[in-house]
Length: 128
Image (cartoon, rainbow, N blue to C red; front, side):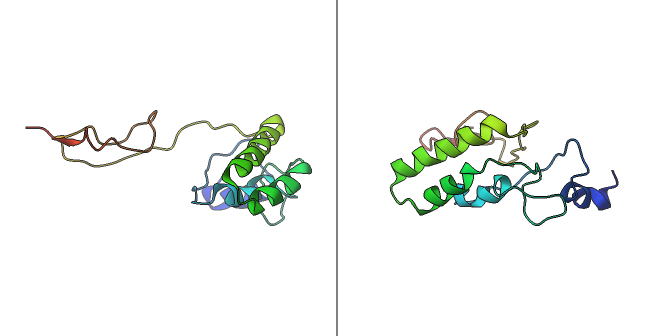
């Protein structure tokens, strides 16, 4: 597939597999809705490039985006996740690279694929 036509073909549904990703936001519930709901038709507007959805997602997203209680919102987003996982033909193929440049004498700081996003600053420091 020529690179100039990459997303034109994806939006038209002319692909079997595609590799690209979306950047996360501070609002993962509301910003991910358009990836899975509503169902999009090839050539239509939106980001649901799988062109499938589950109708109950609309109500779940409405609830999640208006719920102010964090515990209740988490339960709703869990239902969203379970619904998507039950039908969505989406498979992460590779992790995004995490590249950081640090001084070679800096210890316990840098990219870590299987770690959380918080650093233990009591263990970060320079070696001799």
